[in-house]
Each structure stands twice: as structure tokens, then as C-alpha cells.
Image (cartoon, rainbow, N blue to C red; front, side, top):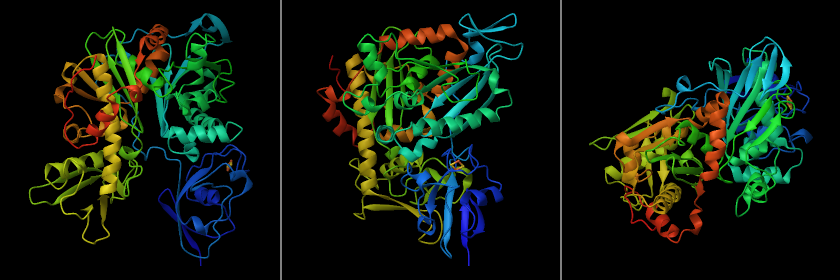
Length: 550
Ligand code: FES
């Protein structure tokens, strides 16, 4: 007898004498490693989704792992039969948004003004020679997301995009959201989160079709926790009220002039030029990070005369409202529900996730899944559609209660009872609370600014989730304000766009440094109407303006 081992969807019969890593190699699956199965690099991680009990006991090199994560080089099948299913950290298969759309500034319109320049044979960073070479001068823009990492390789002399890549953030073994990563980093010594991520980034860089030593600058954006972890800063204070990055605290104490961070290529553990500059863009606050700052650059907010809003809906929704004269920002602790977390049949936006739901007049339900595969669960955009359709057809009321007291709605995609996913009223509750936090954020920021939703001329939805939302469904359930659809731009990955601009233009980078200092951070929980806004926002109905409170 042997166990059926399925890795990344490919199956093989497995016995105890070989590791999961060995079987992955036999299947032709590329497992990250830089220690060749010695248990040292911690890069060969897999997530086990079925058959954890059929595997050998955890080993010493796996002490840092929890949940269903294992090091594939240390793990063997021990059962006599059964099924083990696991996957490496995903590349490509996950729907990662690498591009931005509908923004006012494209790279092609940008005046190239990089910090790295050529003088004869000398390659200079801000006028200081770091190398003598006639080779290319390259740079990398990075968006370090909690879930995904996106990297762009650019020629700094021509502005040309040479390559890009993306992968799932391997720090997931330390938890799926920032608060767990902060707890993990605080409790474990050795900067394991940073080292694991650096290992994955190093591999990504080595796969680029260039000599990594010709990469002289890197601009890193990301939420404050991801950025600070990468720069080996303590993130403990971001997890404690008043939720500030150590760089913010030091700025207030006069110990530094900016919240941006700089280190060398050597210290970053990446194979780029050792004297390369790695620049972490400035943050706005502990929970409105360098990714949000980069979004401001992507929409050219420093020059913008119109009133615009940027909303990046996620576990922690970031919200920016304003123009060149005044900018307000807030973060809304929405939780993972709209990313499929804490939902019975929820899943991330991977192949097989239901992403669209429509109910026709006869009541029959049509489901669309990513990759046209048999559905395995429902992702955020599918949940928004499902709620909107249930509301539209009267099967759910504005309070999130179902009409037949069944306390669950079944979405069939096949003939047999098993071929279905279901939504529970408790799931709807989770989604209501996530929405409530976002709506409260919108009301607090707009009322503090002294404007109505209708005053906004462009409403940018940033990020992968915002890119794939159905706008009408989102307005119907009150996830976004009830604005004219012509004002709404589903802009995709604005953060990587902003990082690219900061990499190609030193003057834009300096502009960003100045701009973040002008942003007024709204702390939602201190607003007197926060709780009322939250309760109102938990209802499934369009979000209309409320009276201004300034
Ligand atoms: S291959 Fe390095 S820890 Fe497994």
C-alpha cells in the first residue's frame, strides 16, 4: 500500500523513505531551497491541506512553524494508505494584481530622474561612485503585501520594464495578517520572517534575465509592518495602542527626519550590488503604510486639484481623501472576511474560487469560478455578488437575515448535494462587521474633511480585490459609497505603480517625502460618531452621505 501524495495538483504514490521535497522534485515541481534539503534555509515550506496525520512528526528545524505548514525536506509520509494534499507557496496560480489601470501618470509620461546615474565609467548613487562598469544600471520596485509580493525590474537609464514577477508572501507561517506576524516576530528570535522572505526574493531576483549585481537601487513599499520587518526594525509598537511604527516614534522624538528607511544591498541579504541602496518609502502611520503613500504618488496627489479618494479594501482597509491642498487618511480594521477568511466556504482568490454569482428571475443561480474550474469555495468578489443578489431578490434583508429561517443559503454548482457551497447567517454577520468598519472609516474621513461623497470627483479602488469587484453589487450592499459609476476607477495595483515612479524619479521621491508629512491621520476610534457609523455600516444598503460634523 502507498499513500497518494498530491503536490500543487499533481499526484504520485508515496512511501516513508523519501521526503515530500524528493517527491516534488520527481513531479518536476520547483521547491524553493538554498540549503539543498539540510533543514537550514526554511524556504522549502509547504501548506498541508489534507492528511496532516499521515505525516512524520515535526522536527527540530520546523520548530518555528505552526498550523499546517511543514518543511518539505524534513517531512515524510508515515501512513500506509490515504491521501496527503499540499502545495508550495503559490506563484502565478494565485490571482495577483501586478498592474495598475486608469491612473493619471504612466511611466511613459514620467520625466526620468533616477538617483543612480552614470558618469563615464563610474556608476553613482546621488553623486557617490559605487562601481566602475559600462554595464546596465538596473533597479527594482517592490510591493511587499501581507499576502503577495510583486517585483518589477526596470532599466534606470531608459525607464523600460525588463521583467516582473509575483509570489505568495512566504511569511504566512507566521500568521495570515499583520497582528499575528507582529506577535510571531516579537516571540521568535532570529528575524525568521525577514530571512524567509529575503530567501524568496533572492530566488526571484536570480531568475530575472540579468546579472543581479547590475541592480543598484530598490524601492520597497508595503504596509508599515511588512516594510519594517524587511528592514529588521522592531514591529512590536505597531501592534500596541497607539499603533505606531518605530520610525514614527523616532520622528516624533526628533531622532530622525523621515519615516523612510535605507539600507545597503548587502544588509538586505539579496544578491543585488552590495553597495546598492534599498529605500523603504515613508509611511503615513502604523496602519497607513508605505503602500498607501505609494498610491498617492501613483495618482499624482501632490499636483491634483480635484478631490479624489483612494480606498484599498483588505484586512486593513486604507483610505485617503483629498487633493494637493489637504489630505486625510485612515485605516479601517475590517478583518479577513472579504478575503474569504472566517467564512465557512470562503477562500482566497485562487483557481476554483467562485468569483461571480447571479440569480435569475426563476431563482436559479449561476456561478462563475476563477480558471473555469469546479468551485472549491467562494472568494471576496463572489461574496459581494452573492450578498448583492440575495438582497436584490429579497432572499436576504438589509439586516443580513435570510428569508426562510434556514440560516443558510446553498449555492449549487452541480446536480449532487455535495456540489454546492453555502453561506451561513454567521458568515453574513462577519461580512457585515467588516463592511461596518469600512463604512465608519468613510464617514469619519469625509465628515472630518467637511465634504459629502458627491464632492469626490474620482474614487480609486486600489488593490486586487478592488480591481475585481462588481461596482454595482458593491454599491448595492454598501461596501463603497453610492457614487456615479463614472467616478469610480478600479485601478489595480497602485502601490507597485507608485514604487516604480519613486524608483525612476528622485524628484518624485522627494515630493512623496514632503507629501506624507502633510497628511492628517484620522484615528477612527476617537471620533464621537464612530460607533453610530459602524452600526449603520453593518446594514446591507447603499452608503449615502451623512451630515458633516466639522
Ligand atoms: S530545503 Fe532548506 S530547509 Fe528544506
